[in-house]
Length: 307
View 1 (cartoon, rainbow, N blue to C red):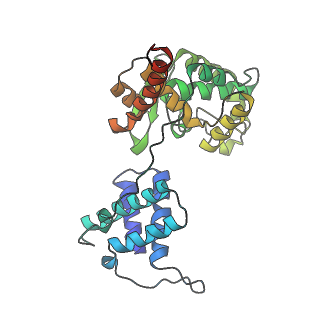
View 2 (cartoon, helix red, strand yellow; view 1 turned 90 degrees about the vertical axis):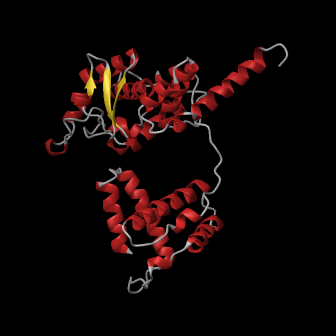
C-alpha cells in the first residue's frame, strides 16, 4: 500500500497541482488509515500484508466509528473520509480496485458555522490598533489593511512578491488555491499603508537578515528580514486583539470574512465577490448571504413597528 500511496501523492502534486498544505493533510489522514489497517510492529517496524481490494465500506465505517468514539470532531472525520474517497477514486482510475468503497459511506452531518466577522466600526478600530510610529507597527498596519482591503487569504499574503504589486494601477496579483491567479484592486488605505511600509520599513528589515537568507522578492518580512509566515500573522492578530478593547474571538481569516460581508451588505453582486475571494464555486460564497440575512433580521426586529 505504501507504493500506491506514493503514486497517489505524485498524482496530487503533479496532475492536480495540490498545495503542500493539502498534501500534508492527505498524508496524515491516509497514514492514519494505513496504521488502522496494518499497525507497524513496535519492534521491527514491519506491517502485515493485506489485499487492498479486500477493503470495503464496512472496513471504512469501523475506522470512522473508532474516530467518533475517540471524540474526534465531525469536520475532521469528514475530511478523512473525503481523503479516502479521492484515494480510492485514483485507484479505480488506475485499475487497482473495481469499486470505490468510500463512496458507500455517508459523510457525517456537519453543523453549518457562519464565518466570524467584525462590523465596519470594529474593523476600523482594530486595523488602527498598531502603533505606526514604529517600524513593526507600520508593517502590521499594512498587513491588516491588505487583508481587509483585498480579502486575500493569509497564505496568499505571505506569498506575495514585489512583482505581484502594481502601485500605479492599485492592484495586487494573488496566487490562490490550485495555483490559480487572480488580480484584486486595493483600497486607498491599503495602498497608503503598503507604500509607507515599502518605502520606510522593508529595506531596514531586509538588512537584518544574513545575505544568504535574504528574500529580496518577498513583500512582507519579519524583523529578522525573512519572509513572514502565516503563523506569525496569526500571533500578530492575537496581540492586537488583546490591545483592542471589545474585539474577541477573531482570527486573520475574520478579516477576509468581514471583507466579503461588508461588500455584500453594501450591494455588491455575489459573483463579483466570488471572483475577488477566488472561490471555485458560488456555493462557497453563498454562506455570506446567511450572515447578511442575520443583520437584515436584526434591523427588521429593531425598526419594524409590528416586529
